[in-house]
Image 1 (cartoon, rainbow, N blue to C red):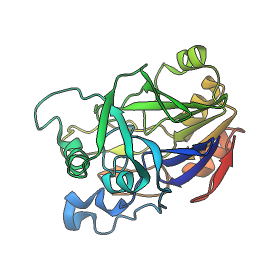
Image 2: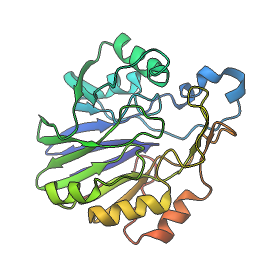
Image 3: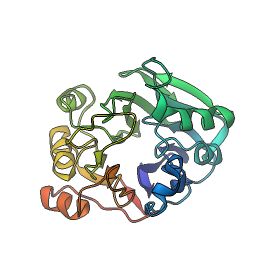
Length: 261
């Protein structure tokens, strides 16, 4: 199995000549576009496009930086399915952060399959399992376990730290690699007030601990180096330096770089 970092949370996974994509992002500037001029100075992360003809697309949650309809459409083979978390219901105010990505994915004509935690599906040589995750603003989220050729990869989206790590390892075995978010961003979105002073996504030290509890061979940092938006989305400084200090398992990938497992 080979993994390729596409920037931000995007990962491409290849095994036996087939590929899947997870959270690819084509237009990072669209993420804070609803804020208009207030977001004009926000630096977007660098991203690169996945290759075409992927046999499946995986979305950890329907926030715009993880669910880019154009990126998925360009990456997927004609019959490929996009697997995503099941919704929680609720009124329009509860769904506010999901409306942009959900609408774009519907308009793109993507074949979508909501997937409950602990459910396993197959696509080409891949066995894909939705794992429980916790979103920093309470929106539906899953992590993904991808298995092929006796190797395992876990992609954590931008989950909070939680207590399922041991169960993941006990049920499925230690992963060869875990892609973990590290930017520890504090969130203050208008639809989630009062704001929490706690991180809305794992910080570098929490990512290192999650990799340790999972007994992962390698920790691949994702979800860092971009989107600093004062008073709205504030990542921790030097996330990459901190995760390197916290763990000996770290395998940093440059943009478009691959790692053979």
